[in-house]
Image (cartoon, rainbow, N blue to C red):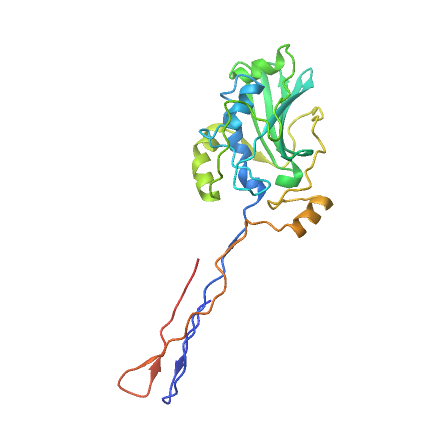
Length: 267
């Protein structure tokens, strides 16, 4: 808001300045760019390494902070599926007994190719949030791994118990995160779509898992999540705040016309 006025007749008026209130809401979905996740599929050789890459601060793909404690959440990876339809499920434990599915990677074999689809959980990303691409089975080690006989990988780690190589790290701003993941988004080759591209979709073992104690704003929260957030509002709203500065006297120049200077203060 900018306040300014011109007064005449020698009246002594006071100028008032106001700060502009600028608010930026950082949502939970802003912490994990699913398009950038697609780049990790090119480099992971199996499900365990995919989990390692997701949680590696050097990769910079994960900036999730569901409980808004300033630390990036650890993402667990579970494998599932059968036949020509396989998948990976990403989950986060926000506290003991509270687990939220974040996204799934769904892979359908079609001849010598594979249709790969990353699907964001509806509470986090809203409805119908997909990225997809078609790869050759021989293009990436992960695709060869997932369709050959092997025991499924289920993350052995949980809240408060993490692998020896893992070190927790702090979140960065949304702008810094977007800049950091720009190269991965370009390299991934994933295309945004609002519909599933797969004919068969096995059910994730973590489907329906929702954590009620998420503070970060959600796109489609459940009733229990709404209730928690109403009692524990997000810290992600940054406000410049409205504030009135001390008034200053306008100056007179050569006549009884008095001019106020215009002031603008913003975040």
